[in-house]
Length: 317
Image 1 (cartoon, one colour):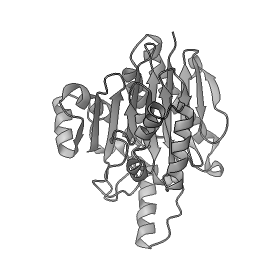
Image 2: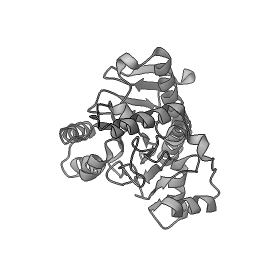
Image 3: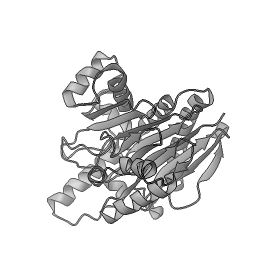
Image 4: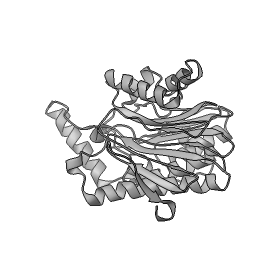
């Protein structure tokens, strides 16, 4: 049996000098748990769509990452989360934007795909739909984290004093996502995010915009992370698929070229991508990206900065 799974916990990491051993261990453990969650599905012959869903649920439940429980705050001190899922074989897709309440936004996106005639639901309409589907909800306090709130206060103070924005990418944005190729060669992608710290209420990034931050077809599956506005303007995820399908480029060549071009245009970030042969690409144009991959050999690989991915036996992940 051959299968492959790749995940990201967001592009834009803590600077090396600010990354304590304890913090790094926490991030790597979270990535490993997500890989294990998705791998359990694939090793039983399960579909790629379920694998990416389970991987993203694990990341949403971990406050280290900017999605679900660890979501950043808007400028109004609220949470507005976006999520998306897409199945490559059928091109069925579902997404939500601007919601706070469902414990796992990726399950809200999955419900839109499977239980409605729509592709994207937003705001209160999406919330009412999620309640009607019986999804697990949490009070707003569940999504609050002291670190994210402190980051918001620092950003609001910077704006009040009209200081130059010198924040690193870790303070600006973050997203989680997963892509998978199952034993049947089918592909899927899932992405979830709390958005950008101090974002304008109502702002929607690339995560739930299919072809920008999330995409899956017969050739590849992609989940992106970074400066969403630029990823939307350049249809980043679909651009990779188009270069593969029409330009006959390899996954690695197409993904690396697009991410490099996004960086030139001010689009700091990266993505995880996979093709129908199970080959994986993990390019990014910033200082680091929380990322990992796993295959049928059961070895979980994780990385943060520009270093070789570190391997861990699946049983220890």
